[in-house]
Every structure is written in structure tokens, then in C-alpha cells.
Image 1 (cartoon, protein in one colour):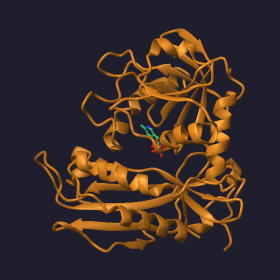
Image 2 (cartoon, protein in one colour; image 1 turned 90 degrees about the horizontal axis):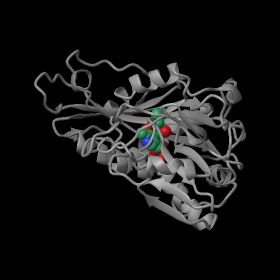
Image 3 (cartoon, protein in one colour; image 1 turned 90 degrees about the vertical axis):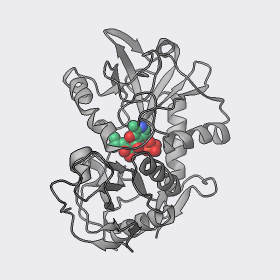
Length: 341
Ligand code: PLP
Ligand code: COI
């Protein structure tokens, strides 16, 4: 199969339409059999639940070309499961987990020409999503839904790739206690847009959100979880009911313990402690692991000893091991790699 003529190494994190996408509709209490389509446009009623009351959820995952030339995805079963959790919280029908994985496979296979080659630094980002599609004017769940999966080739989420970024402690909250911070609802991202635009306007790459209840604990950023490394090489990652249970973070915890023999603590992390860490990174599907060099707390600069030039050494080991597993250079734990073709 011939690859598309794309400058893979210079791709940013943007939307490039690919040839095929998957669509399935929910009506009268059941999902239809689903199909692949070339039509990238969605036509819905002006009063659709998603347009009026933001009833929409999504997932994010990637397809990789391995060293041996296979196309694989990483732990798609966990995305399928998380989407069911998101659906339940927003009173949407679950899309069956096995069908989710099958839809992802179909989309990747149909767009294989867009999966960036091994070593290009790019990947195919896959975006499963679901929304309320029929008219809803009183505040209530829709009766009809559409589940779709599209894909787009992407490069690094942060400009500069592996260069450490500078983030600020944010005065806006991302998630309320007992709210929706733990699911992947579009509304969580809509309400982060003002915060990210104002962070960018002030010269920061991202926001560090604190827990809304006490504003003393580190939560996450708008699109990634945190991992910290202590000066004695322990990996520490915030535990909270109001952050997204990142699949990358869960995988890194395993990699740190089982592949690198590191001690890992999943616990509450106080903002006051950040100055004592040796390394800090953001982890997620889009972010992979993006190193943080500086955290600015209302003018107080917290400079991580790993500096602004490169990833800290433990972060680098985690990054190399995780991406090595994803690209087939390092043997993966059972069930982590889903080979598509
Ligand atoms: N936190 C938020 C708010 C996210 O949007 C994401 C991205 O999906 C993550 C964390 C990372 O999660 P994952 O590693 O499953 O991509
Ligand atoms: C992902 O990492 O897949 C996400 O959904 C994060 C988003 C901010 C791009």
C-alpha cells in the first residue's frame, strides 16, 4: 500500500481529513449495525441534544507503525471501557466495547495510507465520539445518538516536541468535586478554553489545575495527567476522583514498576511539594510524555532541576520504554498491543 504524500515529520497536532470514517446510529433503544463512510460531514437537527446541552463524549487513541512495519493500536479495550463510563455519567447509551474496538480497527485499516511511517515521529490519532442527535429542548437526555470514529495523522501536541514547557497554576477550576472531571465529556474541554487562551496570552504552554475544593492539590492539565519524579527517583502521580483516568498514566505506572524497577506512589500531591521534585511531565495519548521545565505560581517560579533543555533522565526512560513498547521495539505486556495489519 502506498502512503499518502504527507510531510510526516513536520505535522503538528491538527486535523487532516482521511478517506474513511465509521458511523453508527442509536434509535428506538438500539444501535444499528454501523458502516464506513467517506462523508466527513455530520448533518443534525438545529435542536440536537449535543448542540443545546453539550451531550457529547469522546476518546483519543493512536495507531502506530512498528519497526517491523505492522500497524497497531495501544490498549483500545481501555478506551472502549472508559467511553462506556463516560456514556453512563451523561445518560447516554453505551456503545458495546467489542464493537468500539472493531470500529477503531476498521477505521485504521481503511486509512492505512495515512498511518505515518515508523521513525517519522508522527502517528495516526483516532477520535471515537458520540453525541445526542435528536431535538431536545427541555433539559433531558436525547433519545437518539450517533457514534463516530475518525482519524487524522498528527505530530507532537506541544510545539517543539520533547522540549520542556512552562505551565502556570491556574485560577480557573477544571472539575468540581462529584462533577465530570473523571470522564471524557466535551463540556470539560469547552470550559477549559478560556483558561488555555489566557494561559497562552500570558506566555504559558498549559495550565496546572488544582483541586476545586481546597485549591491546594495538583490535579491535571486540560488534556493530560501529571507525573513527577522525586530526587531519589520515585515516580509520583496525583490520585484524585476528579481527574481523567489516563491510560498513558496507568501504563507508565506499570512500566515504571515492572520494566524500570522504580518505586511508584499514586497519592494526593500538594502544590507546596512541587518545588521539591526533580522532574515533572504531562502524560496522555496526545501529549505522550511532555516534560515540564517550569511551573509558575502567581509570579513564583518553580524551576524543575531537569531544566528547560531536555527531559529529565527518569522521564526519558519512561518515554523511551513506553514508546518502545508502542512501536514494537520492546516486548509489550500481554494484551497491550492490538495488531491491525
Ligand atoms: N487528562 C485529560 C483531561 C485528557 O483529556 C487526557 C487525554 O485523553 C488525559 C488526561 C490522558 O489520558 P490518556 O492517557 O488516556 O490519553
Ligand atoms: C488525548 O490525549 O487523546 C486527548 O484527548 C487530549 C486532547 C486535549 C487532545
